[in-house]
Length: 192
Image 1 (cartoon, helix red, strand yellow):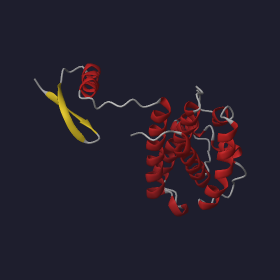
Image 2 (tube, one colour; image 1 turned 135 degrees about the horizontal axis):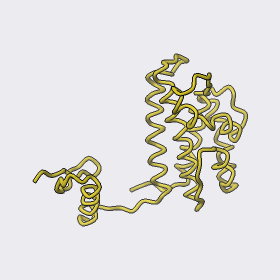
Image 3 (cartoon, one colour; image 1 turned 45 degrees about the horizontal axis):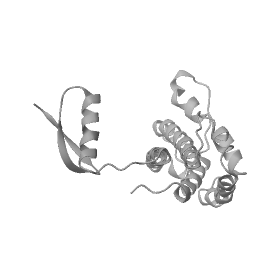
């Protein structure tokens, strides 16, 4: 019978049978990791942060390849917008989870407003330095930046269906991502 190699952090830790049932095979892989004593529980905030970082990393790569220095490569812009907007949402949800809040939806200010005052205040304090660093000329304050950027995830992912012109403030998005990343680094425990 064919098998799958099970890797953890890039290292093969064992094999499981390839039954042809992907769900069963994934469960067997997870069980193997638990049986070997290698499983580590991670919080929902840590999972959200891990995904936020992954989408932000993809947005960063797209920015470097096709948007840096004001050059716009059209095939890069849409994936950058979708990835950066989703990363913003996930960073906000990671902060919510870290503070014991369970938030849903894509509206950034609805994710931001319930956060504890100390986190909102810290984001507001961090944002100007990142806005300056990334030359976000439209930056007024952190909440206003979120308002400017919200809706992009929903609108841009189906851009092909609608030919109305849309805008997205790339430097502002990068500044917001950096601000959220920094606050999450301060609040969400690092994964071991």
